[in-house]
Length: 259
Ligand code: SAM
Image (cartoon, rainbow, N blue to C red; front, side, top):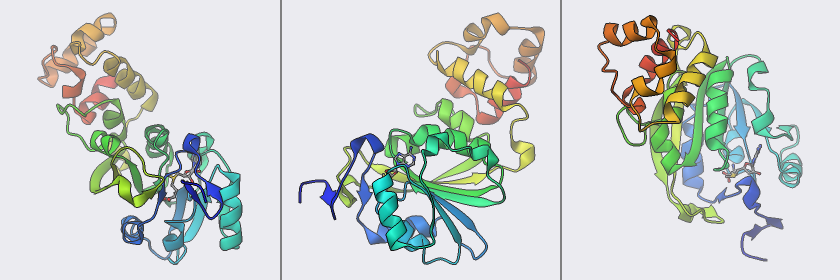
């Protein structure tokens, strides 16, 4: 059997296939979603079933989303009756998901940030999420404002969920081994009154400011500098010369409402 090939499956780099081999870590990730009897848990990218095996032992309803047909075939054979959606999670209509759910996954590294951006902001019934991502992305998701790793993803996600860095995972527990460390992050959605009223506007502000993150906020917003915007800085005692990374997620939300 060739390197990166297990039980006849050759890992596809294009699909970020790094399969977890450590039972203890798999168990810890599944425990972190706090599975309870009436839960509907959705797993993204079940792959060879490292997490699925543990999820299938819980009393929860389980749905998995897998883009690789070959892997989906094997899961179907191993878990008859498992709800398998053979689709691209990036194109999944997250906003149309009905009812409460929890979402879990050891995410493909190349699409982790984009998926998390979409999921936290679109899944209305989201109760909790637990994702393994690149360690560097985990640092961004959990950074405090003013920190070097604080960026657009941080400001956006934290307007929808609180994030908690759970634990680091070394490359040695995967086959094939990735080049970088991974980490597991938990997401707890914010109550409706703490979420942005106009997510489009917030997204535009975050993208505009972080595209020029080294400049002062007043310079970047020169063309939108209305009296309402100026008043926001005064009312909130925020120096107009600060850089985007010094605005908290909450300040991004409240400033976006003035633009
Ligand atoms: N959960 C398994 C584990 O922990 O060993 C596999 C994790 S592997 C990092 C990522 C998985 O996501 C692979 O099974 C891959 O085929 C799947 N995948 C990659 N891109 C996907 C996409 N756009 N939509 C759905 N699944 C995808």
